[in-house]
Length: 300
Image (cartoon, rainbow, N blue to C red; front, top):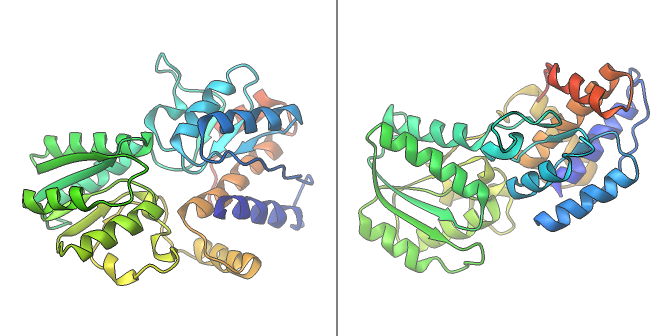
């Protein structure tokens, strides 16, 4: 929802600006978070002749859209499909029509692992819990573990849970029994709110480590914000900067709700795509992709 709202906000901001060269029409399709539906949504958008697409949200959808757009090469800009392979072809070359403003999973996993080995985060024994059904979670885990091993950081436990898991008692007891003083859980904020509460209820006193998917966890309905005191996670922007503060206020004023990392980055994505269309001076897909390739956008 924050993504859809933020794209709408960016389009409205552009259309209402005195410098607008075009009038942007926003067409929305719901991917429901599933690869097949993402492909169906993509085909619907292409059938009505969109100039470009902002989205999708999750890595699995991004992989699906990368495949679906091979023929028509519709310009795509995503705020959060962070899987390393999303922007790459099977032979390792870079896709020429798929762009993103977020960091990739490798960067996120490496960053938090390096913060441990450098002493910025004072922990010594790490447990890792991974969502076995999430390309995003798996990618972040792989890069974190690789960097931790390179730095000789001690990983005492690695466990995987299915996306349908609601009761994490068994996993939590394994973490506690392992002697870990920190647990790395790369997953999205709805799941994180559930897991961390259950950890706290079980008496775990260690440090929680996460990824940009955590952003928004403090706005989950009914969450006790204090359980996240002392936790660390990586993110792709700083919410204290003027650009983000102004955007967040505009979002609250317009939609009477909270935004998150996904929405914040999607607002920026929309402007990136619009500016590329302006630069291209046409709705021709190849021209817009070339404009995106050379874009240097200073925003959120």
